[in-house]
Image 1 (cartoon, rainbow, N blue to C red):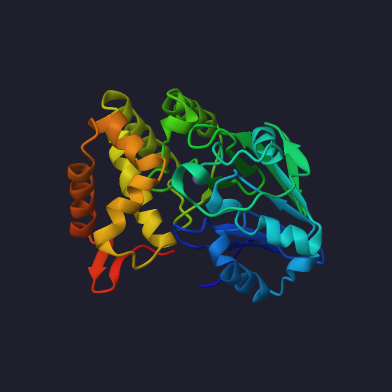
Image 2 (cartoon, rainbow, N blue to C red):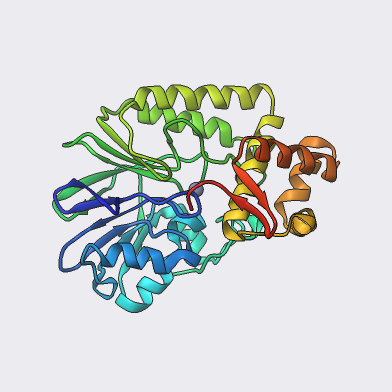
Length: 307
Ligand SMILES: [Zn+2]
């Protein structure tokens, strides 16, 4: 399935985990919501072209936050089309000041290119995606510039990384600060006030069980608040998988050496687990192999989740 028309002219394009899901409103001057991961730009372009969308005609990109898997195509598309790019006010500040720490890309060693953010969004703003009005709801927690987009008429929520169906996006308290789990809970509370028929998340398939997803997410955060080390375990698993999506076939013998060169890995092990890097790495890797989330073969390690 390439794309799903979720409202008149508005298409949902499901990707995997390296790339966030994204959207296009197809018209003479197309509007995009999020643009995937930079290294997979060719596929992003291909998916959009197969819908008849010419990226040089794009008028506007709205991004749900500045993480690399959601803004990856921005720079190239803006260079080609001169399009406007809208972000939450805080995300605009990150781009304006070229803050690759706040956008996580330096912390996790991810690929990303800065772009010119031309307009700042605020809580309560209405963004017109063609004839479809979406309200901006500011939902920090996962990302301090995170927003979701809500269409009241159709009761559709574009939830990005604020709400997934069963899992939850990384909580990164080392960059976002120790209040991040609390902000996430407040964001869920805001979402709970909405009437939602269908959720289109940043990763994974669309889903209807909006209240169930909120409940599961809240439970996960309560677990984090009881035992902070769970944040470190969840984050490490997700980022190791993400690293293997960025670098498929990485040689197993040198993966720990690579991780030790990043900002996130030594710091995470120090902070949550007292600095025993090798033992922690072995434990996480064996769990991921056992669950078949990653696979070992002769040429190296591979993530077994869609990219
Ligand atoms: Zn994110």
